Amino acid sequence: MDKIIQITSGRGPLECQWVVAKVLKVFLEEVKQNKIDYEIIHRENGDENLTLKSATLLLKGKDLNEFLKSWLGSILWIGKSTFRKFHKRSNWFIGIFELEGLEKIEFNEKEIQFQTMRSQGSGGQNVNKVETAVRATYPRTGQSVFVQDSRSQLENKKISIIRLKEKVMEFHIQQLEKQLQETWNNHLNVQRGNPIRTFSGSDFKKNHQEKSFKKERNQLKNELKNYRNDLN
Image 1 (tube, rainbow, N blue to C red):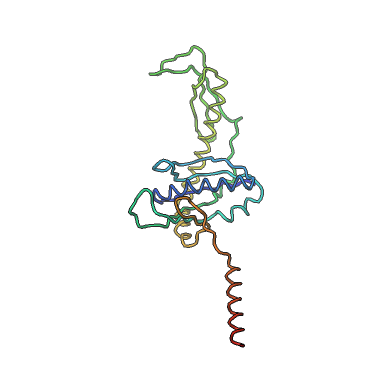
Image 2: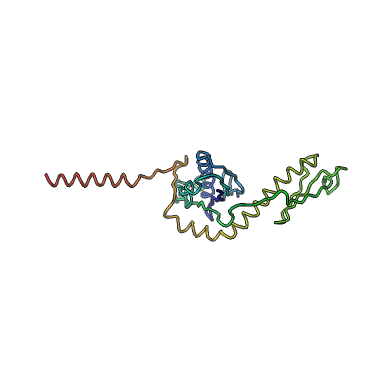
């Protein structure tokens, strides 16, 4: 089973971008604990170091639906902004959503078209007599990359495949994000009052909610105690 999910700050401020980076770290720790394979297929850096506007992951493993039950939705971090010292707000929300409609990104290396040429120096001057540079194109999307990192044509081909795959995946993700951006913003607005997880403080500790059955049990005990007192 494959799932593509995104951790996003939506249109949230810099503080939310910081929360995305923190949540990604916690999320990956739990992914590893549950022996789920993952690949970060796209990330959009935030406006400051150590922040992220979004991160998109491909997950592979069993029982993904069960695992994601405790993650999909809005995430709340309670804490004071480290970017705006006197900001009064202390509740910051981000969202984690499954990207439906793109169940699997297909990339077939056999479809790549390669073109070799001489490596170029400054001003477009050819610096090699041998055609070691490589241009790789993926006809299905029109994406292409030019690689002249190595003096070996074979090595440049290997590098071009890796870079072209990243570029094609980024293209797919960006197309899907455009379609779902409005939906995500609506989700964030609707779900702010009911976060699936809550973290707090600069150490980003998870807030454990008291289980409802404990409250019910204590309530029953108190009612029984009062009832016995009434009988006496």
